[in-house]
Length: 164
Image 1: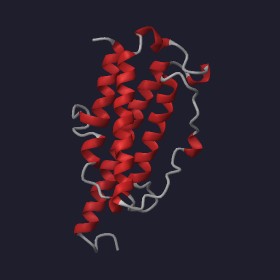
Image 2: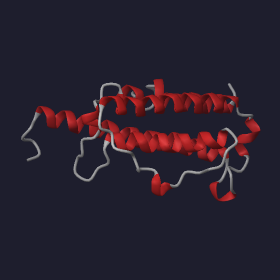
Image 3: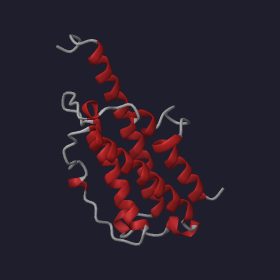
């Protein structure tokens, strides 16, 4: 299996269908989250909706580069989620994440192996490989946060006096 295919498999594992590293994935964790839960604020943590938007923001930005465009994303805007005010809006965000994740994986699979060691836009951003590996690690990092926030929300719902 080529390196781009292996990377695409790892990317799909964390986002869409894997259980190897964390015994879960984004799709698994978010499939039963309501828009109310996605917007639930726990102390000073980001909400599940914010983290979902944040991950898709970076996937979408890198996708643009994969498709021959510029790197137009900026860290300062990566949590600028528009308000989620209905289940339909939440499901639309999830649908976008699933579609962008699959498209990212497909384009990655088609990438020539030699491109992995090429400069990603500018030397300050290192190589394609470094950015793809970083994206996978970034996804696992936020998957852990989402999993914990979801557990806190469920715990609070079942133990209303626990944190008061």
